[in-house]
Amino acid sequence: SFSAHAGDILGNLQGQWEQRIVDRLTPNHQPHQSLMFPVAENIEDQDVVVSVIVPFYRDEDTLQEQLDALTAQIDPPSFEVIIADNGQSTELLDIVSAHDKQLTIRTINASQRRGASHARNVGAAAARGQLLAFCDSDDVVEAGWLTAITQPLRTNDVHVTGPLRMDRLNATFQWKVFTEYSSEAKASTILQWPFPLLGYLSFAPAGNLAMPRSRFIELGGFDETLDKGLEDVDLSWRA
Image (cartoon, rainbow, N blue to C red; front, side):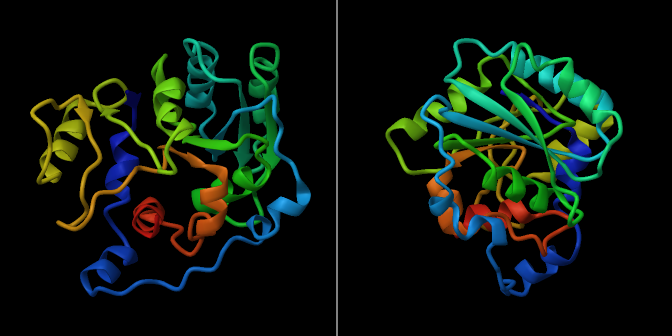
């Protein structure tokens, strides 16, 4: 499971893309440029099975906890952590340096365009693993997260998500609002399985998502025009 901030998820249910879905319109998607010629670069590393991509923008406090959680993963596949810096933080280097002895970790500049979609795409373009796992800098993964979310990818060309624990990082009123928002919420208000949007298909939240790198590249990555949310809905439905 996965501890998530309800505010971010609720934010994904707002904005211009919601109206596009209601109107049955699909935005024109253009692949991120750095995802278009990855094979020629031959950057995959046989010693790295999974690249964990963490988009970062002004989340210094929670990033520390997220990196601690990644350090504490139980029996994970070999993995690297890529922090895609979307805001040119002056404190990020110190946070990452404190974990570079426990993690294979690096920071890349993803500030050319504002938005988590861009940061995730830049991180994916730099990834050395055959599998990509996405988590956010303001959430906290559980100890078995990386093993659980990547295990199905060993034998299936799919994209994988999992439950979200809403009570650890949110006030009671926040996760209650989120639970009541979903028409298909489970009985538990703590673990939320993938949920549908506006009564349509289910989707995988971008902060708790894994898929083969080759499939991500084939899809062209996240749509960077969706810079206010719902890029995960778009990617899930295209996949």
